Image 1 (cartoon, rainbow, N blue to C red):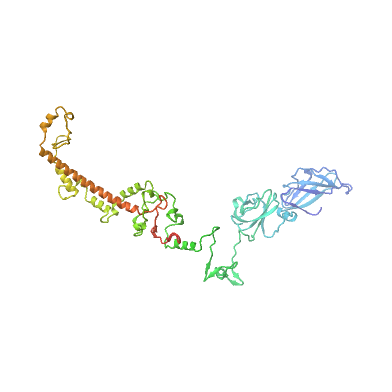
Image 2: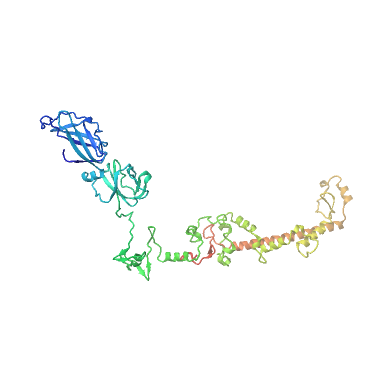
Length: 514
């Protein structure tokens, strides 16, 4: 029996057996033996009987009575001693003992590309499968979930023929799956793995360190932080520190270099954040520097929230005649529907907010509070040119009209234009009828006087109404004439406050002082 030869567990191999010598003289090499599968008997560690090899190929003579015998992964699946014996007719019996080693041990000993140190190994084996970020360990691994987190897992894919190492970040026992950072190349082929008990430190998974002493001095939870000194200065690795305050020179924001004039950014930040309880966010601020910066038709009635612009939102005197340039608002400066929108806004305005004496709103409130004029008794209480008195006078006259036939007023004609009534213009019996019903000159004179009185009252009332309308329109025009439009259809505005916060900036530097 020769020296014990190592074999790799669960790996096919070709054994060299012999020499096979003649059983008579004990020295002549037998070179023509037929050694079949059934002739090669194996004994595995812990076994009680011998059994033929699983691999079916017969032995092949090589030289001087030495034969090669193929075996497969089943033949080498048991760790420990593997004894191979052959007793072929005409030759002396041959026996060779082998030691089946774990794959990682055999590879450490004989595979230069596989070599690694075995110290600190928790387990090793052949993986069931692998993906870009996982390895399914051997089914024999029985570990609690996450117990391997922090350990280093090395894998060797036979296709790649090199090792890769990663720190285990998760482990699921029910599926034997260890999760790691992405492999450089996903292991494939026969995947051998080794799991190290303690991980070395690496850039992405640094083991936790509990520092209890430094140079023999016991440390508390904040001693290290309290003891770190910052080197003040402007050189490499130094910070410019004054009285504990670190000064910095902001040169970029998210990789974009700042190019604005020195001081503008700091001044802008100070102005923007100089408010105790901000109610807006940067998302609600649009890039508006002047009215000229607004796109056409950006500000319309539909674009303004209901109640967004009220008297309470403007500082006292913020918008008056002096605040609006001459001819700032003209018909040409307004959108086509601006007049209609303004008129609608005026007529839709709630009267309760207009109680100043002498204003149109106050007058309308007073008029409405006086009750429905059509249900008010006009018999008394009105004098002079008051509408009630005029209507009373009209009523007194109309009460004198008679209607012998429905919808036909009885009348006495006192005068008529020359040649109005001619023989050809009247019916044949008209003369007779006129003569019989001709009114007296006195009656006609009275009717003409009454009609003149009615016309005068109506003209007076209409004139008063038109004068009032002209006054209101003139007042509106006086205001709108004060608006300016540097850009067509875009009103120039002097913003005094934003969202109830007074603006103190000048639009240039700082832009807004809100």
